[in-house]
Length: 112
Image (cartoon, rainbow, N blue to C red; front, side, top):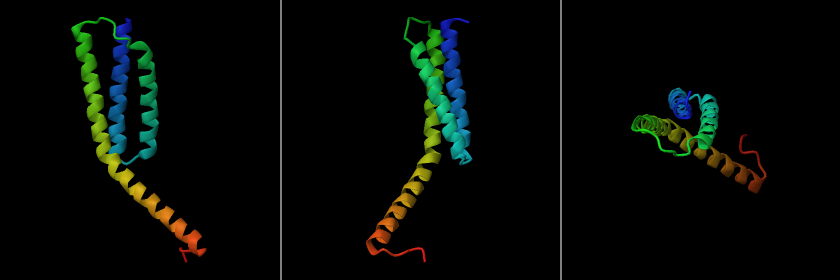
C-alpha cells in the first residue's frame, strides 16, 4: 500500500466514524458519541503526521475532498442533535447552581 493510499484510508475511517457519530447523536447515545469522538480524534492525530501535503494527483485530491466534505456535513448533522441537549444541560446546571447558592445563603434544604 502506498503512503497516499494509507492517507486516504485514514480519511475514509474518519468519514465512517463521523457517520457512526451521527447515528449515536440521533439516538441520544451520548456515551457512545463521546467514545466515537475520541476514536475520531485519534484518527485525526494519525493523519496529522501523515498528510504532509506532498504533490499528489487529482484523483487523490478529489477523494480527500469528498471525505472532508462528508465529515463536515456529519459534523453539522451532529450539532443539530447535540446543541439542544447542551442547552438543556446548561439550563439544568444553571438551575442547580442557583439552588445551591440559595441553599448556602439561607442555610436551608430547598428540597424539602
